[in-house]
Image 1 (spheres, rainbow, N blue to C red):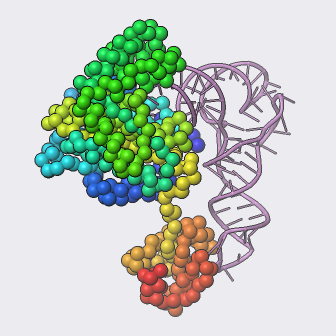
Image 2 (cartoon, protein in one colour; image 1 turned 90 degrees about the vertical axis):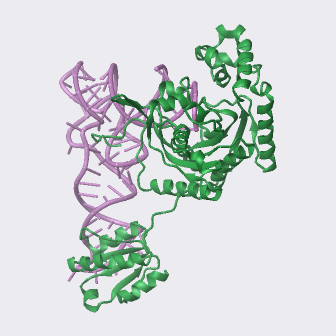
Image 3 (tube, rainbow, N blue to C red; image 1 turned 180 degrees about the horizontal axis):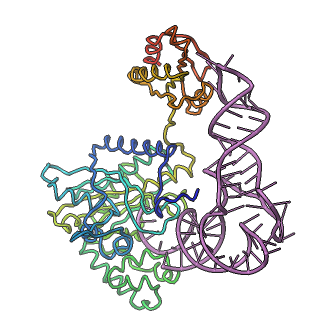
Length: 420
RNA sequence: GAGCCCAUAGCUCAGUUGGUUAGAGCGCCAGGUUGUGGCCCUGGAGGCCGUGGGUUCAAACCCCAUUGGGCUCCCCA
């Protein structure tokens, strides 16, 4: 790392050649999967009104209370989106996607921003892909979305992942559960960690998620949400589990799984990998039947997921999974002299029309240096153009892998490239 | 927001108890082949030793601060 005057901002990274090929490949896998599932891409702005995120994600969440990048200009408060679901829900309402008929199946890929302390698998600008199935409360939708998420991982070759499943209930179930939790924790309140004490009133469910040592003794016997689900939620959860089992998707029930965003209702799930260290949550999601209404739309049940792409790549790395293709070059035009360069400049479009990638030397290096450059770029064919070739109108067509070459008219070179 | 570790060439790293012009491997450039890559040989470029201050006759090395990075906690993707 040189000490250049300007550097990437804290927690932000450049994706350089060599790395960008992997991203392109990963994105193509996601898009291909989306096509198979018939989900359409939606691209929303990276900035949203602060109020949308605050209301949608929840004022009390860590994301909203301390991790947002925002600024104001005039009367408007802008925030760099910290997640993708609230913006998609906003677009759904704003453009009346519900009027397009049937449930909407949407997916997105893009950068998200959270002002956290960076570490392995955690950046301030990171990338997520996700999908949302909006306009149905059917458990079928929950399973389809889970299956989409897992299909991407499967295609990539990540087998060693676990699906954690829970139901966080609806407001009615949660109110009952909250009361039960507070009743349970109240006698121990003074012995709980500071964080947990602050969560006691507003959001006691998050106490269950605590990693604080002093809380652990009280967590084991705490009441479970699944015991407080009302009939409707209980039935929904049962159906989701039943469908998953029928579809051969294994899962681990975790009654303590609580997601960090407030909008989730009923189904909550998370994908974890044992191969990526402490940042082991590769993706997660759930049902959010109240979000659309919360931000001003008509009541719209929906379910979705989001996956962290950096973590996905880390998991691949840890498992030795090679992703992405190489950036090999098909044809390199090696030129000697300005006359040859002009010829090459004119020849390249014809070569590219054969479907082969093609470039030339732009700086007038020696033939030796040009071939070295071609070699470095894993070039398949070099076409050497010099005085002799121009005079004869036969060009040296060199197979870089075989180390063989022959003198051919340009037309012949083109027809060979067309079938190469 | 809290803790621990780190910072020398493009990359990975040496650098003795503080002591002249700061090194290696890889990579890059050039030559060995006046027009032919990979292997080999030779040479070259490239460092304000992250930044600022301090201690000292003398600092890459010791001290302080600062910035950046890594890892962990919290939380999350």
